[in-house]
Length: 119
Image (cartoon, rainbow, N blue to C red; front, side, top):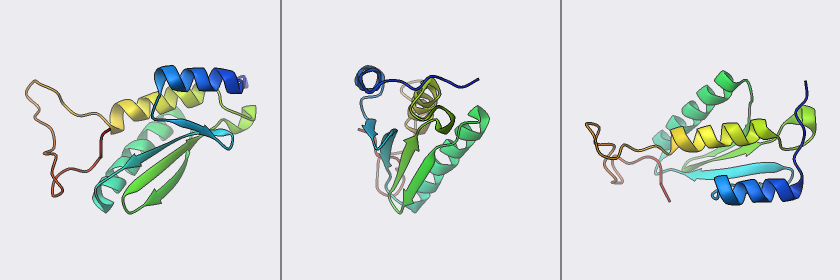
């Protein structure tokens, strides 16, 4: 079963509402996640790889020293589908997650310890 490719209007509305840090470009939805170092980039790439494999939906990744760009589309459908939005949302939730309150204090937001740039 092939998912239906969403229209440009549907994509713009969904990004605006649900994934404002993502953009629609060259037939893909994209997000650049900034990191503080190679370590942060590799941690982000590993998390994205795990999510993609578990979902059986694999993005293109552009990896540099201090960033990873995620590029999602559904090749079988020839465009962007619900699969892309679901995986993008899970990437946002997991890769950019930081504890707030509770027993987990989270990584210190310093150049030495921090790894993902939030915001």
